[in-house]
Length: 73
Image (cartoon, one colour):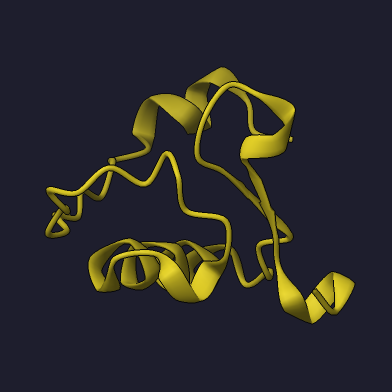
């Protein structure tokens, strides 16, 4: 784990990404997300070197998109 001294030397790297104007609250599949939302999620996967398994588009439990590559839906 990083020590406080090591963390003090860290410099953040910021990225800007285009947003989307439409609400995603009623989206129920990854394919129906706006293109910029999908690009943003792909970038997160790339940075983490991990696939995203679910996406929340609202506070309710049913507002969760389960990613196809994990659950086949």
